[in-house]
Figure (tube, rainbow, N blue to C red):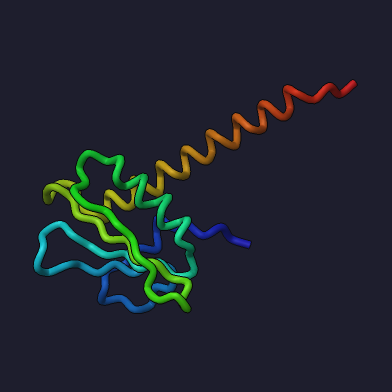
Length: 119
């Protein structure tokens, strides 16, 4: 089974072929975009939004559930200027979460393997 790369699934709002993430822009507010993510929970939305808010180039980030009966979330991001887009902020947060999770897994595995006496 081929591993899906979520960094490659973000498409512009004119492409309806996307299944996981849909990006739409706010035409009234500059540097603001919404990301609808299908089949994800509020826990994932909270994790991503907190990572986005750690970025100094981000003015605003929040999430909401589309509907109580649907398993989709919408994350809204606004950045300070045109040089750093909401898409870049979103991608950077996903990379940070991935790197933090990888580091935590390595530390956990190290502690477990070091704690075992195998003779």
